[in-house]
Length: 264
Image (cartoon, rainbow, N blue to C red):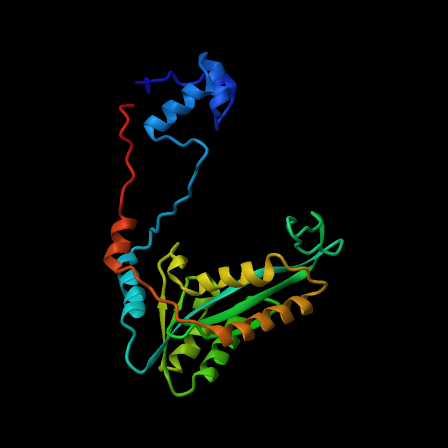
């Protein structure tokens, strides 16, 4: 049995992420011994994850509200997840990309030219996957309000439930006044630091991977045209977005405290 007790490395090394070879050299043992100890102890120093706590005092109420919409939407109403993807860059590679070939990956230059940015506003209908969208040069409350009016026109005479995050433009007095004048539209805010509850973020990830990230755009107009073409194609092949976690499951995980089982 290999001992899992090792003296901590001296501070003079100035190292925050140790390799098995560097730590083995310091301790006078082989890197294989270090690797075996790490495996036995279930330690993986090369891995790191991020986490973020929501300090929203209405966390429970907001999670319960939004998840309730997903799992049991109101009858004869439409649930839409609304947000904007801002600062999408029109990046143009300095040389043409070389397409994928047998045994060769697609190749592109490391350097690029920036041709400006655009903002994509989107409303995802979770029951069908249909996306209502607009591309605009900025993402102020004026653009957001114009987009809300576009969404309202796309779903006339229907009760709409909009899930959105706490971005300041979403709560401007002009937006609140318009919503008050349109009582068929109901807003449900995700908790602070809880925008992952908004399913349109999943769709933003899809369009980023499939249409934007590996693209080369000579202008913002070309980027906008690509985004519109992708949305048209998406709406032809759309599919529902199904939420599976209950509010209790989410809140239990959110409240879980990570504790150390070490003695120091």
